[in-house]
Length: 478
Image (cartoon, rainbow, N blue to C red; front, side, top):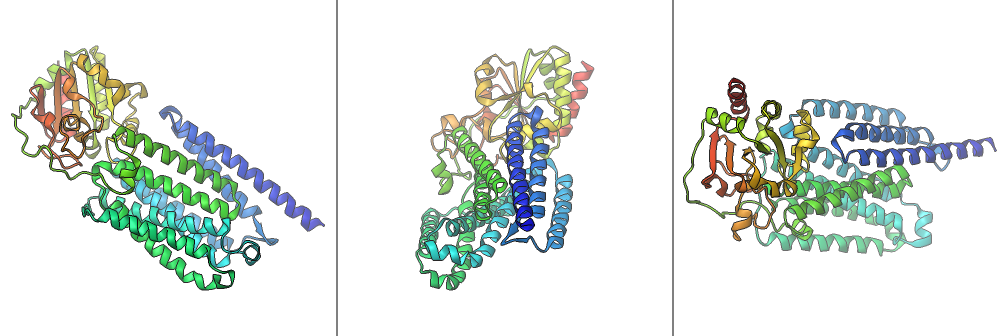
């Protein structure tokens, strides 16, 4: 009797802990929607995760037995925490997209391993009642497939973002991918329609399903170009959330289920919003139709005109409205702090300074928001591209720092361009345009930027950080 009461009390405490953890996850996600509360939201979500882990270790029981191998579990958690902490502390802001891809891939791998370990232990009692076609088996198979695709795809995305893997552009690849996807669905149907007596013999098919899913994850991401990587990262992140939710179903773990659903739904919504921002469909992403690497605007005609740092400083100092368009080049140069110093100096001179934030600027969703938040740029100065575009004709100077594809007029003017139809920051509508770049290199979409040849454009060549420091000195001297 006492054992039963102890078991019931333990279950009750565990379930209450899961509910509290779920509430903390939801509150944390809500706070992440605004930069001023994002840090607090991250902490709340972390507390929720710690609570869920502690409750599982202390109170979870199966068939009346507590969790075993506690030493191994705690040891793995300590090692993983130390590795994650060290990596996160050392990574540069320019490598943040790679870090997000890597960590996301680890989540997918964990979900896939859970499914592989659980399939041989599917309850015989459950299978005798409903056969292989039951929710438990379906959750295992979906967790395996989605987790494997997320892991493999994230690792390829990591390699692409790090410059170690190029694009694989073969037209027939989309049909290969659809064939593999159909094969994966066929595998799942085959396994779930087998006789219960043959369940032990199906374990080897799980290994084959894992290998095929990994292959699909690799081929799914390989043809997608760099300009579309932010969408891919967001989509893979939603995959990992769905895979984690499958684990929640397997273990009847409400906290794991809630966390997975939140990540999956948030990632899916973000992916759809980013597809709209690029004027693409989600189907284009899934079958790998779009991507950079086009040759549109090659050999663009026009004259490149330069500007000196001194002249740029005068132009900025005597302006009323200035808009800065940050891009990946700003992150590479680690120039966000000196850029903020420049905008503060201009505001002291009575200049209104805003930052135009394009949804896919950088290498991951929200890359520029994170970059500028690190430099303590006030959130009120960050304006989405669709909101700032109507005001650009009244802007005295627009300064493009390391951005390329998101200001390229080819997106509106050249139907043959791979970025045609993508909404952009209409920099060409400003009264004066200053483009800060190291040289005339192309952007991540690998196409020429027609903005460089605009009559109103002046190129300010050099490293962004050094150039901005020189600008600060010149503005200060005026």
